[in-house]
Image (tube, rainbow, N blue to C red):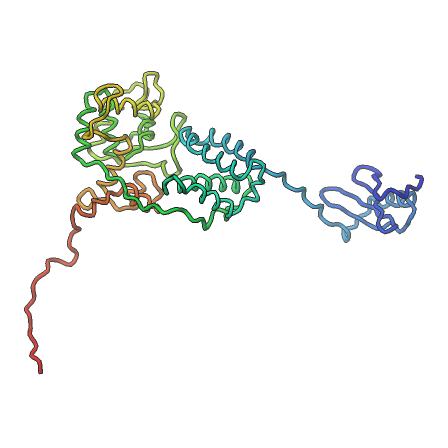
Length: 383
């Protein structure tokens, strides 16, 4: 080989090189993730190549060192959103996707689609939250933060491409508003009476009031899910659940059992939804809402009377408020939280949004000490 003084690295064969450092040549071998280098003791390129071939098969553990791992490819915020939306479409409810991704796209626009997700900091998230405060309620802003946090956690756990600590210590606006009052039992009874003539919507609303289920959960209940008094709320191809806590088994009360059992007994295919549409598929909640409001109003596009103005979700609010109140129907907050599909340890949401503030004035708990009796007053004379 003719000497080529301008070269500092020459490839001899796959994984074998000679490298010039400070005028001297060294052999360098790369195999099985290890890089080995040893001195050839010459300044001549031809002699270095000859010695490198001779010593290529010799073991030199003392000079071996791990080959540095390749740098991870940058995951941009725009690309991460595409992957998250694809994953979400396969694993979560479509209604949640429609609320989630408009917020995430606003977040990505603010930080830049080309931003490396690994460089998102607490200051980035705090600045974006602060920009959302004007013109939006605290509840909306806190909900937006929860969506951003879920996205960051997904990146960290599934892509190893974010720092979860960036979501910690974020200052969020406080909600000082009052909780909406739950409908009274009298109002619920009036609404149920209005719905009763319908072939199935009256039973549907009655079960919402007696079980506290989310409307989408009850729409997906199948005949096979009922076993005596026990009802399984599980995901299947026709219905996805809101969270892992939504999957549960509840015991129905004496009012709910006969309503649901009667409808299940009339089913030919009990693997389908009890309240299925004409084609046997699960109803979408918006379709039920339109029908619900139309019946309460008495005509299409007519206003609903104030005495009957309710939403389907108000039945869940009514259930939780009644069972959080003192009295024979009272349930412990932890048990009530698990029954409606919340985390048993998450009672703040239940107390904030479902427990009716009027419940504290509906009655007093039973006495623990016993009846108070007036004792004899003993007067002590002053000395």
